[in-house]
Image (tube, rainbow, N blue to C red; front, side, top):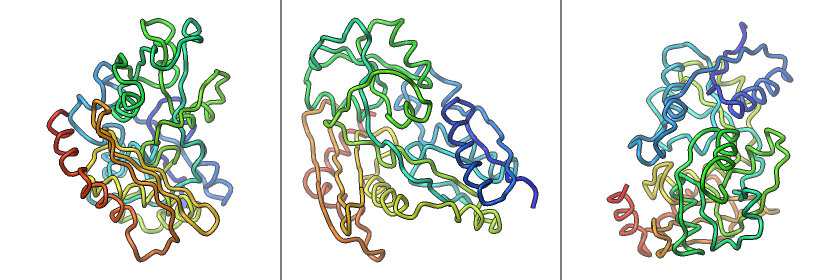
Length: 302
């Protein structure tokens, strides 16, 4: 077999993730080639994602490359992947999850400020909503770009702190101070690298499936089913996190209004079986407890 062509965004973090997939495949004695592609989400850094009006902004260009046979597989941060995939594209494998948490990065001059005093830079509606639930009246600035760009903007611009995914900081081996944020439920699938393939490339897909981490797959499928049942795009203020604890799965999730005032949460522990759609089950509980009306309100605003 020729080298497996691995498509990726061309940011430093995305390239790290592609190399990690390549390492797993090479460990199984397969040749690989990394093919960087500039995504629409990387081209437009002036608008927050929710203002772009589309889902899959970071995956669309790689989807096109897959369908046009320019690459064999595409590597994504799973939290960026819409729950509704294009025709003939499927998620083939997930690497083991690492560091799903959100963390706070402060400017040096803001070290001694209390959380309720901070002016935050984040374009994530989830992070804004969850923060407002705990610190009403907080001020925000929009911020886009890769980790390095955001950290530079933190130094150069008029705000006190930003919120980033811990996974990116750890993967880039960045030596920076951060604070954990227990108030944040991660975005569904945060901290997971996923591999998408063309559904007709059976041979390659079977190879890629050999590096799938099944416990991670179980957890993210619950989270993504929760998200899709709520009909929330990647930008909606929805957090969901499943983890395997012994012979149980614990699932924590929440839907939050944009202003943080309305918060509908679920926290369940259960024994897993592969016949029940747990994500859909818990999403329906949220919908029946005011979530349907709240989702309609969020969609109207977005």
